[in-house]
Image (cartoon, rainbow, N blue to C red; front, side, top):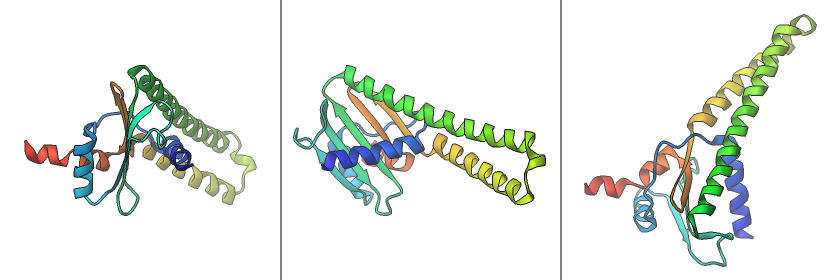
Length: 172
């Protein structure tokens, strides 16, 4: 039950706030855990088969105290499956971006083609909605990163990804 709730949270997060991979977290779970805990993140590592979804070998989940920043790092049993999961994440991200862009296009069309039929309050409402969609699009493109290296797939906010590496940066 716990993994199903976590999976649902991850899916909702992925749908609304993905961006293309640029930052890479620390992929050593022990180092990442220690770094994140030092940065006051709540960290949990799951490695018991009963707690993991099918195909997962190990999972790290971390959240900042305010809940704004998070990171999930999941090691899969094989590279082929990790690649498939990553491709699904990419498709969901691209679909969400496309859906927002289409909503923007629709509202622009309404404002351009049907403005004579709209009251001033309706025009204001559509313009406000357009501003919100542009902000949502910007957030979807920038807020969260995801990526894959071998058997490992990750997603998280830039801040959490950087915090996972702090020990390594200070040690060098």
